[in-house]
Image (cartoon, one colour):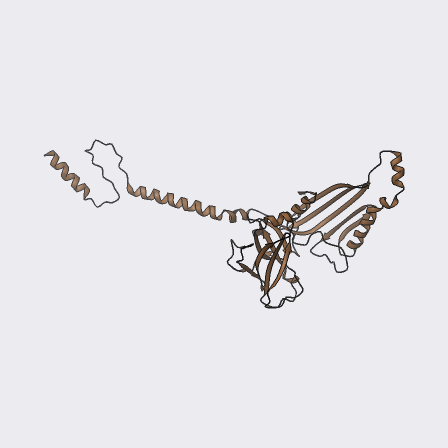
Length: 328
């Protein structure tokens, strides 16, 4: 009799419409815990949401990192991107991909290809007549595979571009920069009112004949764009070890005046620009070039680097030439 009642009770339990509770037959010998299935579902949802948040964070990590990276191209206060794009890769034109283009200020850029002799060629086409390309203040930026900027060059092929025809140009790079080049971006950068925020000091010491040479150049940057540089060059005569050597060296006055003449020529070129703080004494020269205001129209002076050059470019090139460079 007792068994019949128990079976009946079990049947009623099985017919229960409460889906949130799992019933366990207390008459079995197994010891089981009564679990609320509603709590299980909530726990599953929490786990799924947590996994989604982790995935979103990983995807957005490069963007989040760039916010706190002062050297990131995303933080250029003086940069204005006005790109209309097509088939880009993470916002870049991928070199050698033969797809993707960027149009900035009515000039379309595309087909960036690596050539021989550390050269990258590309095509451009004006959608309107461009009377002065220099006034566009457009720069071609090159990035490595990790999307770190390694080179920047101003776009200034000619004084005027006609509307319509497809034109081509080349960028010649340092071998190390060429090897890393992977992406390209076209940006507009206004550097006229930019403020210097950091410097890179490059030094080189070597000997040439009877001279010991000490060269020191301070490159000044604002928002990872070169704005000015200060040059100091000094040549000192190496003291001879014996009186006999002193006699021999004193006979050749042309040799002792060698760097005096070289620095005099450089000073003359610099003085024909609007460079500042230039000073020359015997075998010593110092001057400052402000790339935001430099005027080379009446001078043969050749700039060490153009305005907007990135710090990494200078460091790679100078260190490959035997200079020692560090930030200050």
